[in-house]
Image (tube, rainbow, N blue to C red; front, side, top):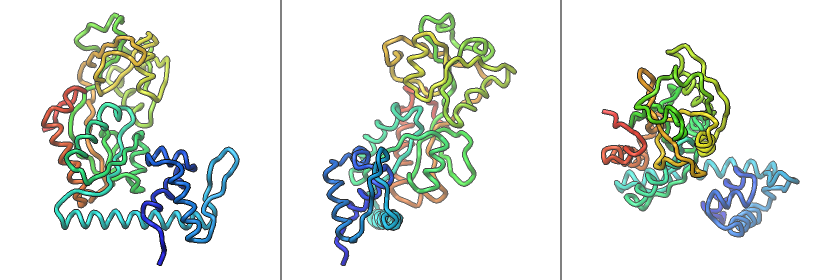
Length: 311
């Protein structure tokens, strides 16, 4: 009878995915010695080396290690399915839940939702991942995540979107900008000004499409993939930017005051919601998270970021 645990297999897969003990430790919030010991025990149990250390590249699986890793992933997936069965039989949500979130608003939404959900369902353990839109699609299809909080941007037909709130686009400006005191601003007024573009897959196309109706092209002066960097660039006068989620503070990370001015309609608003694979709601834990998210909308938890509940 093999003498290893699911926890050891989880450590093994984390090392295989991240390519190192330290990075696996950060992902799992487990000490590096614990992970090293688990790998050593598995190698002793299987009587084969699972990883080799490559200079400047961390740990790489051996040929046998790759086969063991593939099987370990299947075993862990089947174990999760058994937990889903038990949850359905017992009528309670329990077990792990892998939640992805669009990187542009993850820091504003997911930690609070996660804390509330885990308090309501103490038998569920959430593993969160921040991704761009294209990465979310791939992670769902590979079953790396169970569901994701994101926008309705270019949703593929094989995935299912559950809308929660509507978010109008707004211009992010330095508080000292001439347009900062306006009630709203038109895309044609923004087009000649220097723009700090939040440059992420799929999201970029949406921001640029807001200028299509006025047949203008924005003057992109800066590009960044980081929301915090974008806010600091705007606060220091390098240009305006566009976003859909309002931060809880009107200060940039380096202390500069910002203004958020709605972009005049007609422009396309985005819907924020939950994205899943078809049939994911068969899992009681996934259903519980969807229900919790809808309750959060009804309670006004999304009001602070500018969310208008979908009817």
